[in-house]
Length: 327
Image (cartoon, rainbow, N blue to C red; front, side, top):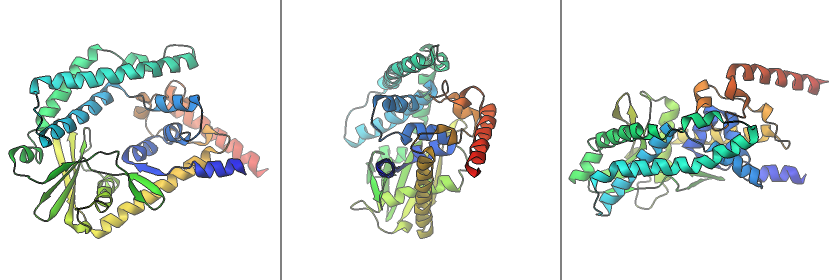
């Protein structure tokens, strides 16, 4: 009984775009990162660190986004920005992140008793090229709207926010804040930067963006009416920055909340599917081999070596377990 109470207390209560994306790409990776989050012990922290491992390409994207926000913050506070330091800022962020990940690979190699497949991705020589790519994207962004309008003074009321801010929805905590907010007349714009996106995002992506409106409705000084908002996503795709934007409606706002509640229900189901015995064999594997290539668990996950074979083996285990339960 105590174990069941603990399982209920530890079930997921936080929703964010990154959690949703990971759950959709690979439920097993989601469980390894968040399913053990509230359990005690050093090994669980190792699991979380391994789950946070990122390829140099992904580290470049994070560094770029960080520098973009740093540049906007400097402008808002009237702090001088030295353009010649751009490459150095990006490089330092990447090298720092790669250094922090070195210990993660050492833990993995201790567990498997051989060199990790992830080690081949750590090549300092690649940093120069990745820094060049990040600088090019940064300068291209500075020429886009609304960034150009902010620097020219055309947009006068604008604010930067942290994605770490939480918004309460019933019993859940949501990370749904925008990166940038500004006004044009009575209309309020909510924008997020996506350093790598896809053209023509589907309905799910649209509702993810609309979730920012729920955050805005909880802020002092921002409109309570969803129809006064335009939600935007400035994303890099096919060699240039593109801006997806759409005016919010009351129906969009309601559908976005329904999506979040459905996601939380799916996360809780995954949590309970893991069970008190922490049976990972019951958790679905990744939907794409591409997800496995950049996953910190690829050395120890059945799908890391051969995803198709691992799926077949998992199906066989599920059928055998189902057969035993019927008996």
